[in-house]
Length: 335
Image 1 (cartoon, one colour):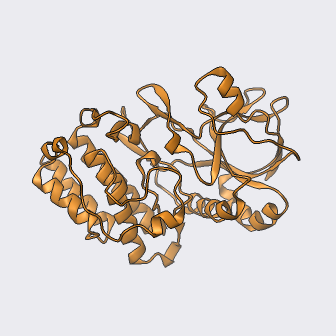
Image 2 (tube, helix red, strand yellow):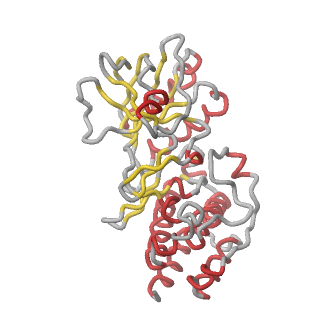
Image 3 (spheres, rainbow, N blue to C red):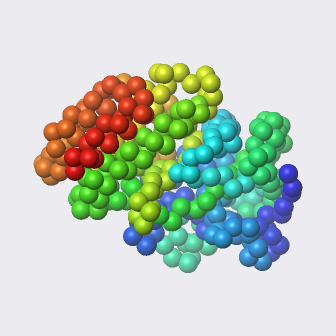
């Protein structure tokens, strides 16, 4: 662990807010639903441009005004990112630690920086304080100090790779694309994306983690590499060897109702937790089964086998991500 000063005149500092920005087609779009319920996110910069990473990363810090709610979520995300190994589709933690803001710090409002004035008003350049910085292999030290640091006025933070790829919500949502989602990705690509997500879940479950918060805002699509990337584990759970089969089934059901149904039809399944800053109870209190909803265009897009697969998934009939991935591979082979 080392300490750094957070100050735009000296060392590290926070730039524009990233809370509501999503990338799609070489442009950034302000999406209010992307704002988180437990954290603020800013671009991390250095006064001398001497950050150790090629691209300025994202700085995700716990909301100072929601500590009781956000504290267990940050603790869980540290556990997951510190323990999961060998899944390159997961956005990695570059560093983590705690921020102690200078007394009297005023946090900026969540303003989409659609102009230079709003960028300055909504940015974090006026947030100053002290950073206690830990490397990824020091996560256990972060967790050991967690409660004591928070009682002393520190806020946990994660430094993460900033995502520049196309956000899948912006590619696949019927509302945001005004119905063009069917043209944005072929069903062959959609099935491949779903297979990649089930592969991520298969590996995460094998190590003891569930994701749970499967809104498409958390998934990105690297078009040149045809690769899915996943972000934001703070509603997920790290169970290790105690991960129970029913938790895996719940994770797959949430994936089916929120991500899979959205990919197939342009919208989440009716009754699923809304797209936005979800809380753990939003997921826990959602239905145990869902029904598919198809527009006329979607009915023409999907074949009978794909609709049957989606309906089975929404009924919670899959007990493992491996089983889902196998069925998706069969569907993809027919396209």
